[in-house]
Amino acid sequence: MAKHLTLYRTYIIRCWQEHCDQPETQIYRFSLGIPATGERFGFTTSEDLIRALELALAQIQTQVVADVTPQDEPD
Image 1 (cartoon, rainbow, N blue to C red):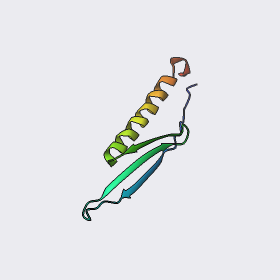
Image 2: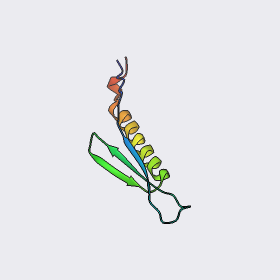
Image 3: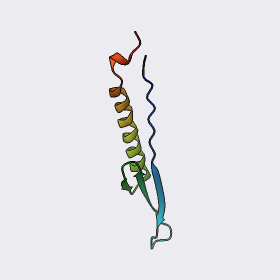
């Protein structure tokens, strides 16, 4: 019988605005925390944060494919 793997990941995303001397300029910062590993990564743009999440999700997908072997397939 085929295995159906369900992988759960928890990410904590934080966003905050930093003070800037120029009133019309807004500076945002982002952090991505992974509670399972204790890792935390900082980003200066939302685009970089999204790229990091996309990479993490692609790695999970690769892991699932690698974990399923031909012997797991039904006869």
